[in-house]
Amino acid sequence: MALALLAAGTAQAQSNVTVYGIIDTALTRVDNTNANGDSVTKMPSLTGSFPSRIGFRGTEDLGGGLAAIFTLESGFGPDTGTMGQGGRLFGRQATVGLKGKWGTLQLGRQINMTYIAMLKADVLGPNLFAIGSIDPYLPNARSDNSVAYLGNFDGLVVGATYSFGRDTSSAGGPAATNCAGESAADSKACRQYTAMLGYEVKAYGINATYDKLHGNVGAANGLTSSRNFDRRVTVNGYWMFGGTKLGAGVVDRKTDAATGVTESDLYYLGVSHPVTPLLTFDAQVARKDVKHSGDDTKMIVARLTYYLSTRTAIYGALGRMDNDGAAAVALDAGGTVGAGKAQNGVMAGIRHHF
Image 1 (cartoon, rainbow, N blue to C red):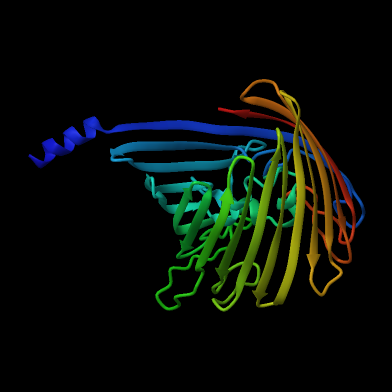
Image 2: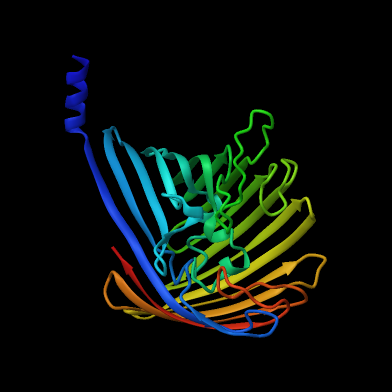
């Protein structure tokens, strides 16, 4: 009898699964890649205008306004076809949860509140030349082993995540910190919590986030004890003037690592303007101010995107990164630059959504 009822309920439930993705690749040339001032032309692995991915998204209507949801999303580099996010099968997202009028509750590897808060304010997003070059965590703000809640109540946005072990990969790169966590011996080891509070409507929005990650033995970036931490506080906003968007924000960061304590503020301001229905102009300026140090960084980027169709676009970008003191922040995400050197870059690519 119970099996019959279950089969009937399954037959009545409305469910669907969507396969989606982005293939985005570019050619770029940057100068001053080392102390000798050499230039390089290459096809970047990390991103062009958006990181390439393939995903599966599903929902099942459970009745009464409640739905079961899941997302499985894999990142890859179209230059070589290799998998991203430290070689994970579903490194971008792997979540399952419930969604209703009260909001969304999910478990798994997922984007956290720092990522979500900047989606509307950062006009360049994960572009190869963007603020993700200055702080690689920002476009890679995901948490393993996490529980997340996000709700929107007539524009009031509330969200939080709690991770029992932020990042289990040891493969290196911005998406891998080798901090497995979930330790019975140390309740703070590799724990991460993020929170967001904001108000967002179509015309404007502002939000604030708090993000703190504790370390553990063997973790990257000097976070070799649960007493060590990496903390970011962000404030982000966007304003619409017709079809033109103005986005701005600040990221206040404090890192207490085995090598010492560092603090910095990253400011950004951008504009996105539809020149025509098929052509969009984006520009952004940013500055990283390292406290008690002269190792500061400034960035300026401009990008044009032309839509060949609703799914396919070509784009080009120019950028410059100025490094002061011993700073060595490359203009292109994942690239290199000589310490204290300015770096100029040009990029052109194509993107297809499916």
